Image (cartoon, rainbow, N blue to C red; front, side):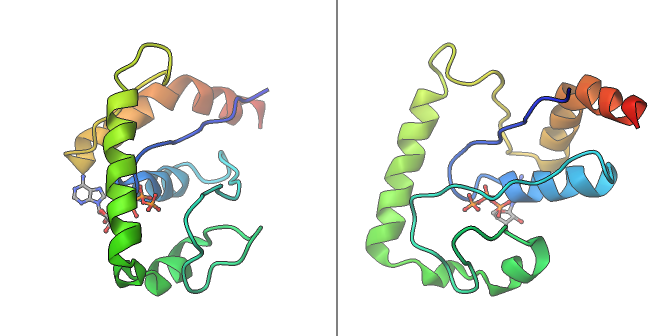
Length: 121
Ligand SMILES: Nc1ncnc2c1ncn2[C@@H]1O[C@H](COP(=O)(O)OP(=O)(O)OP(=O)(O)O)[C@@H](O)[C@H]1O
């Protein structure tokens, strides 16, 4: 069967942006699982309920960060970036400095799996 895809990366790296676009362009191909996170819930987030894209996005305001939690997350991001260089930690690393390029890369990587799911329908 189709394999799970795990998008992992520092907060604000663009995971939701890429995922939303991927799901929109491939309707019915991907399911969605509720994220796991160690940060505190943001307004509108409920434990065990998915990150229902648009409403959440609107509710979400980076000003919900305290300076301390922001610093913590920035530090975690630095560590993530370092870890990503280690062989075997991630299957593939996409650098999202250019959204279009990153999206093309992501699509290319998942192309075979997407086709498999579409053919099985
Ligand atoms: N390549 C890019 N260049 C500039 N801005 C981007 C790029 N990709 C995403 N963004 C913007 O960066 C912000 C954070 O993106 P997004 O919410 O997708 O990150 P995330 O990795 O899902 O974060 P979190 O893990 O905190 O949920 C959004 O405002 C998004 O529009």
